[in-house]
Length: 83
Image 1 (tube, one colour):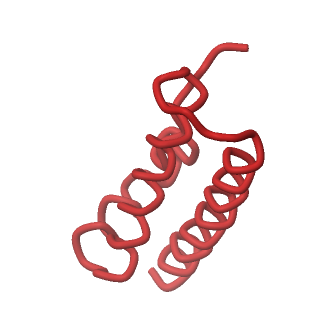
Image 2 (cartoon, rainbow, N blue to C red):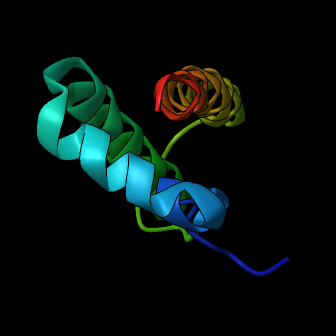
């Protein structure tokens, strides 16, 4: 299994303009975006073997990342619907 980061822009390439706009103009989105980025970095580091963690912890973090990604994407879709 190859390791890969799951940046929000890579996950949703068709929405990168909206993501960038929200990062610059919506403090709540920007804070959650940063949290997502930090979480993705932590998961990648654990999977790469650079950081020690239990399987349970890793799975919990992955669930957090998915939930956060879903929330962020909902905000992206809401912004696009308002335009």
